[in-house]
Length: 80
Image (cartoon, rainbow, N blue to C red; front, side, top):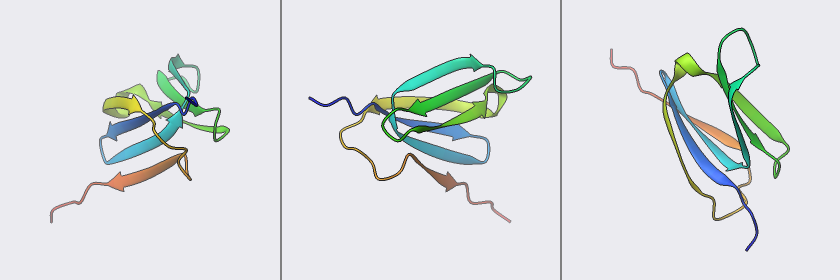
């Protein structure tokens, strides 16, 4: 079976990010002066970093396909 990494759903304060084919996660990543979490994909040769204080929760599941893109966003609808 081919290693396709994991699919991570990261819920932030104003949106939800879905990251595909993640192969590495780094906690307390030295991205800035604030603590960060970095998600990387060796498959897509890219990654994304979030400040820990902005992350409300995240969860992962095994990836079953090579996704065409590393990430996509789902923004919350604001009620007026």
